Image (cartoon, rainbow, N blue to C red; front, side, top):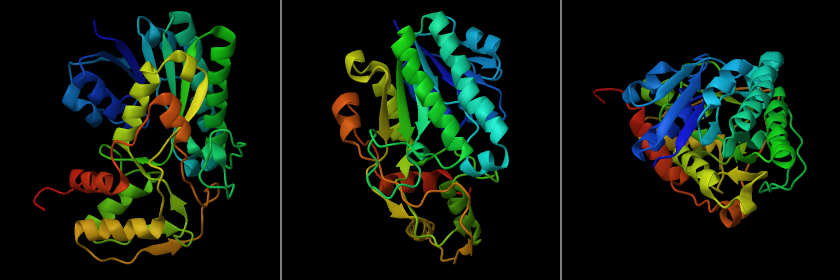
Length: 315
């Protein structure tokens, strides 16, 4: 008998990639999404293969309805973007912290076996120590980071107090197919790729020498599956990094994308954005040892697949 999964934010970038993998593995899938940031087009290939609950994680009744009868909750729903949270901290908190609390309560009441939470490497803040180790002090620098860390702490507490098995995954700059390049709050890679294909200069904030552990989405999908099925004594109530364990500067990233597309365009630079961190790199020792996580797709291969996915027709 297949397991029953609820993917919150299932119409989003990471969520829709999770839906694709779970369906291909033969599982029953329910999606909860209000389509405020998720896109219906991401779910079109799977029409009729999953159950949709349309609504928001900020509504407790919707959360309880979505959790009924499922074994695993993969909680991806969030208002993404550091810069967006700086512009609108209230909405970021209501969805990312309050919505997570609503989902945890609903999962507890529904008797869900395990709750996997999409946490964020932004919790580490701007400390110069690299790589980032889970036991480090958290020093969030944006409302987004604070709200995501609050959700992570709620997850840990629900395991300790209510016995709901929870696992938090601190994502490091996830990228790949189905990422939206059109929003003003989009991540760098989809914007860079579309600009490269169009021969337009992207905007790089700061000097471009800031580094990131860019992580292809298949690694996040694999981490979620491991988080569902790793032994509870190893993972329940715990937090794990999800990255590639390698870093690249934003300037280098742009050059790699230009090479892959076959263009040469100089970027434009603007002052650094509030809330951004300088450097980021995941330590994967704990994830490998307890979660059984291994990098499935490295940065170079992930960039190649993503550039191909965004390739315009006829090119």
